[in-house]
Length: 78
Image: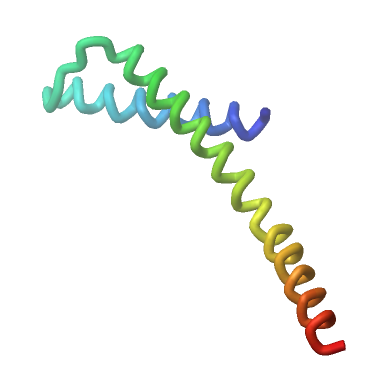
């Protein structure tokens, strides 16, 4: 949960700053800036949390795969 809130807050801040600067500089106009900021922050938070879980699971998956390969090697040569 804390990672999700961290990603959400950081994405909200990033999007708000980006859109605020682009509006101040007259580069782009947004129809509904609050909806766009909230949508982008929510998607970034979901993707960030998912990627964290995948990255954390990688070493465990590698160890499990190596254990399977070792068992196969032992069966083949014994």
